Amino acid sequence: MAIEQTFSILKPDATARNLTGAINALIEQAGLRIVAQKRVRITREQAETFYAVHRERPFFGELVDFMISGPVVVQVLEGDNAIVRYRDIMGATDPAKAAPGTIRKVHAKSIGENSVHGSDAPDTAAKEIAQFFSDNEIVG
Ligand code: ATP
Ligand code: MG
Image (cartoon, rainbow, N blue to C red; front, side, top):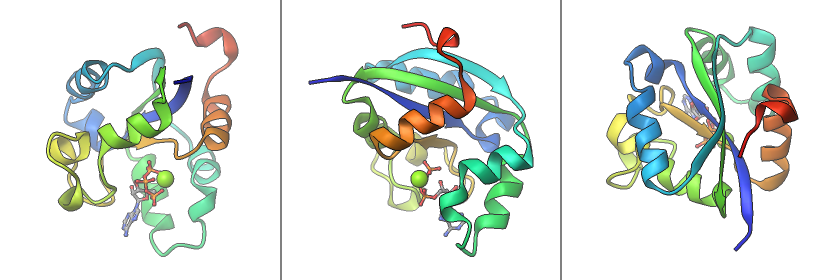
């Protein structure tokens, strides 16, 4: 299996509840390595760029407002099949539908305030990592 990198965000609902360590523990227990990490407050422009694919969706404004409502932790995660594996560890978008033991089942508040983001494919992972990290900030 190929070693991959994926992009992760611990969202404002997670940082507000002091869950950075608890979520990082679930990530590391699942065998993914946190090879880059920083706590930042993203701008409205960064949030709109990041979620541009959802621009026409009814929840876009709410999503952008939420993502800039507090600090986030942006991360690069590395491991075998990391993109799909992290999506599995995160659980379904709606915590009510997420599998037991997943980050969203354990920690998410709602379909909007759902604690974590993870890239959905290799091309989006590369693009998202490049939006927030330079090469010398990623140390495997
Ligand atoms: P993410 O891209 O954040 O990893 P995802 O891939 O599981 O999540 P998407 O369909 O890409 O889900 O939606 C992006 C984000 O938009 C969701 O994580 C959630 O925060 C928000 N969102 C999605 N659907 C809704 C909804 N119906 N109402 C409110 N917010 C929503
Ligand atoms: Mg998505």
